[in-house]
Length: 482
Image (tube, rainbow, N blue to C red; front, side, top):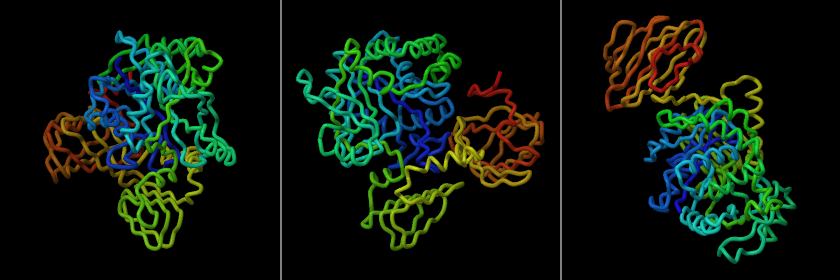
């Protein structure tokens, strides 16, 4: 039986602001290495062998579909199976869609459900744990993975394991799911040896999951079935019906199914496989510091950082020099448009700052300064009354839409590569140090017809400079509104 990975790529990671934003979440960031957490999750599958594992089915938010697709491409993964959620409805509906698509291929694979925003430091141990869970999963058992706790952690949910499952070596009966405990209870859990952290990773057959959803969550199953009735392939993406999926109840895998199995034994047993693979959900800046490599003073740094007489601190710099003197136990995260300075003991509360930013209408809560598009990216360098300056990068072979603006004019200066420009009735090439002016209301387009990157500086002037002042006439990425 083939293993079907299902990678859940939703969520916003607000506790990792300002690096993680609503439109650029933590799973797409290289927090602990050169590759993003999504790419690391994909490469974790390499050791299984292609004959054993089907191409991954990635479930992601429609808002950052192009960024996910680009990361899959750069990781060498075929991404014709990128399933888009029109709106977020938590993990249970996402898995329901994935299970239905897997069954539609005429097989009943075992689904390996993994969040894209977790870190596993020992991939071989992870693959060994999955191998231990395959037998019971093939037999119709729900399998979850419990992480052996290294401390009395209050930020995780727990699993209580029961007796060993003699029919399946290396697995234990799952007795209960336990909510996040207080400090004393967490210490008791650690001392007992019967409790494991809930990793959020699962194994089960597609048909077994759908049978449970149909019985336990009929409204969810019905909404997902209606959404799948209009499933269509849109280039690299699989799209479901927006209205039907928006009506789906939101719930997690744990609440929707797993916690209810003990009172519904007819749906299948549940087992837990202990996972000792250096796992972390990297849910806050203190967990990033704990997981990353430290210097002799317990500091973790990245970027242009200068420390003097500092201990046990995390300092990340993206765009400038960050210098600290005499600090202990602090978190400093610098991005081009925001800087976070926090006591490490308060890192779980960063989301409160994000909530205040959102309530105040601040775009720093949701958008990074550098924004990725299907054709490349733009970085807003400077803005003021009546003007904005952007640095724009266009990927080889890519093209912006044929468009116009009602409220702004644009001046383009090529700094790298060759731009193929449509400016009203004229079509021409611009090389480095050459420029063109695009008046308000003029149809225009920028293309990169070469195999090398293209970069320009764009100076916008006008009475309104919002991104919604774009009227598209032609677009290869299907972004024209009906």
